[in-house]
Length: 380
Image 1 (cartoon, rainbow, N blue to C red):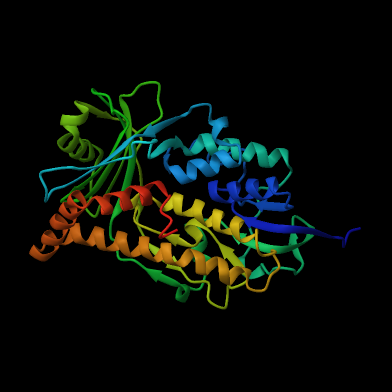
Image 2: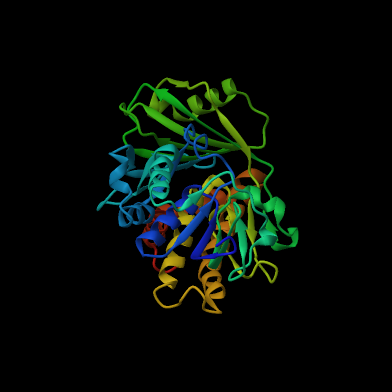
């Protein structure tokens, strides 16, 4: 009995939101899965007060695995997106008449629900650290003194796993910016509008935050400038005094460096499936990083409808389906961020006229709306 090999369908490394959601979706499809997590689940992430912008496609996915209703209305809808730049006096407004374009939720709420389900299914092991070089499908893997065999290994461990991987597998972006994230109270209602304002110092996004009041919002400000809390408060007030009135920042502000990249598994990691931040990291200017991770999950699940987990070309097909959109978003965020950072006449001309083109051409606006909602059938 000591040498017994426990046979599972999938091993998922990382119990963050994407790893947990994929695990839940697979369990509901009757697959036998195991998730390993390096942190102690009793301490991990439940104090995380950050928010997620969940587009319509991701919201539908959460509904499909019966998690959305468990949020108990702890979300705020986004009914409109407004984009402004320091180069244009007019704002560009996107609105979907049929439904909200997305919702804002707290990471903590969704992760708590997901972990409770996985713990109830005895499908998750915490305080377990494993090296990627030890992971090979269909071979014996020892976890907590037990032997396991898995048909498929999925890496959902996030950006920190990059330290373990071959640097030649990465295509790096070029950002010297840091992102600053926090919350603020304001005098006027947010009216369920999300804002993206390209200031001279960097993009500033404002989203309505889930709260008992409609006068509470979250922000993400990306800049290469060294900046203090009073300076951030001044930037938000300068750009949103008209729409939000007087503002007051909450004391806690979370900051992190922005390091965009695309990961190519190549031969060394070709037997592993990478999703989410393990696969790509894009500049938050697009607000779609997590939603792209949900599409990774959906592509994986859709592939299971036609291919078994142990099919020889399973991984190759998965990557072929996810590469195009990943490269497009990576390129788009690099170009748009550089355009508004350079401050050259050519860059300013391009930045100003691209917004005017979106405003004038209805088919481009429709394309943008559908892509923001995650329902664009051309790119997906």
